[in-house]
Length: 227
Ligand SMILES: C[S@@+](CC[C@H](N)C(=O)[O-])C[C@H]1O[C@@H](n2cnc3c(N)ncnc32)[C@H](O)[C@@H]1O
Image (cartoon, rainbow, N blue to C red; front, side, top):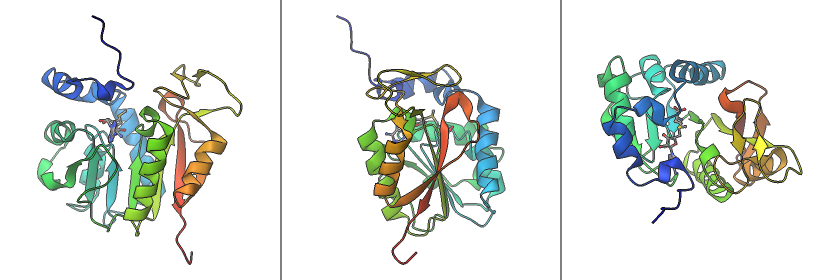
């Protein structure tokens, strides 16, 4: 009997267990380890991230960003969520120059973007190469909860694949990845991405910064009542 392919590799049975057993924690998050970690750190530094700020890395994977952010931030100021806590723990153990700077309770398993146990002190957040694997309604709900549960958020960045307005079917992104409206990797039109970001309580700012695989960086600027 042939088994149906899961919509996203992250949903395949035993995906994390098998990859971690084979020592593939870097591959799980797509490789390009140094380049992508450095890029995320540059985005945050350019946005004014200081060591005393509190950073939330949503869908943090094996800490491709964390292995740079943890040494930079004051101890305990880096928080991370992911569908797999085992993956984050492996990153902590294998990739951090000094794992003691990152208490294990900062690594929170969360596949629903509910941010359980994340305190309300977060000032900066990033969700890099995560929403690209998820359908529109999941992204919309995630953005709403991030907005509502983090009242002190100053800067928040996420990535998507975009499709030209009116695109039907698959879209070939600038570096060759083929994206879809109804299966991963997902794309949205710019207009739809703006609409769902606004519906969550943010104003979107689209960046023209070049990102791996042709993803687009969006800054979601929180709109608070009275602001
Ligand atoms: C391409 S990796 C990016 C990881 C990290 N942001 C980085 O740039 O290194 C995608 C990550 O999203 C996580 N993920 C997938 N579905 C998720 C969900 N529903 N909730 C939270 N994390 C999820 C995966 O476990 C994986 O670590």
